Image (cartoon, rainbow, N blue to C red; front, side, top):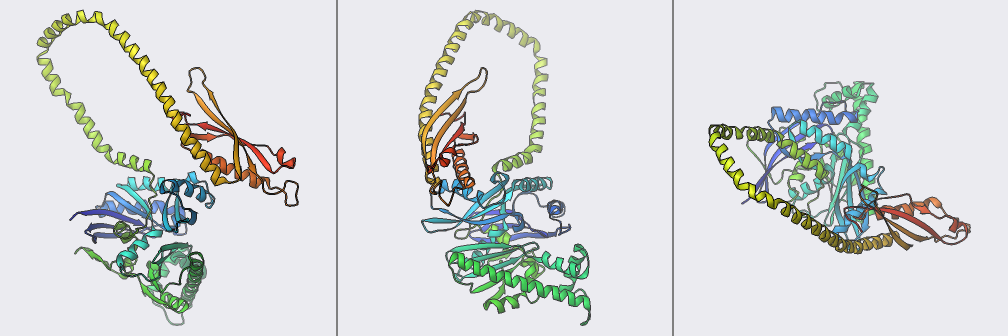
Length: 555
């Protein structure tokens, strides 16, 4: 029976939890479990990365954890969007997702690292969960991980992992369930039904209550956080008429009401979008769910059973692993979700680690071994060199004898050089013939991509296509494909509705972007749009686009 062991580190907004998990025959065992609180001002988002790096150093130094690890980042560090795309083959899905996502995110797609998870497909449309994180954040995160002595094998988003944890903990349950995971910065809502799942992340968490307390008591955020923990854990003594205690209780009641309202709004939104039934049970997770009165308020407002989620239902613990408190049990669901990803049906998850970054980190981890090998390699010739010095006289005599035998062969060198030159010329001729064959195949594929782009854009056609090839002296050849076409404008140019040039420009730029997605195109120039045709009363808009061809894939 095969088994595998992995290190999973959940980097939350307020603390880090690391676990060494072994999977054997469909079973999970936690061999080691440690947690470290993040020490930073929770009101300053920019300090989170530094605090994560410090905590990882502690894991490495004090708990002897190192090597490859699967990392989980919190919902407040990622952008999550549910989008619908036409049902297409899996090989073409990424391109369409990228195009649709660009219309739905607030920054350029090239500035983020993204992945997607299919959450529904009816044969006509595919429902996709798009998850992205800024590339600069991922790069900074990986750099901090490397400095702490770890190697990133994957970066998952906490947003979707609770779906795997529910399936693993309750494999027989097909009921509509809502899992509410209340973190420090955000709350993740995961709706599970027999057809799959739906997620929504709301900007409401434990820090929201802390800020409310800070505003009520006139304290700093850090002071309010300390007061919150002591008061709600029972460590802070107070009398019944203590005004400070009343303010804390009032802030907690306000937070509970607001959380209940957001959850109700999310359930309504879920039922409207998915046309599904209301949850029959609510499960609570995250340390924020321990707030007194929250479960009772949800049970009353939603009229369903509310219970705490136990992700360790089917997980065994090593003898040295102790949970210590109920709150730690509520923090481990994402780790169980990552560990069981390949053990449940339709496991959910993404990987936000770019391939090139992964290769760089793996190479960096091998540098010490490569340096040692280089030193050994440099020292290896010395014994042979010393032996050579001892027999140098005999080698010199042999060298002179060999030189005498080589002399007659020198006359044949010119003949060999001529034959080599002819062989080189023949090889170049063969390469040119192969280039022509490849060019034919490239044109067929390129025309297919152009046709697909025109089909997606709709109401547009090409009139002419010409190729411009140029080669300056001593420079690489350049290739351009100039396409000219027309776009049908359904509004009357002189009618009362008028024509919105901005919309038409955006449609042509979208078509241009689709052309640029071709494997043969590297860039394109500013499209030339002939607006005079519209002003003349015609309902077509001519345009011209110059496409720069990849010289490694010439047409």
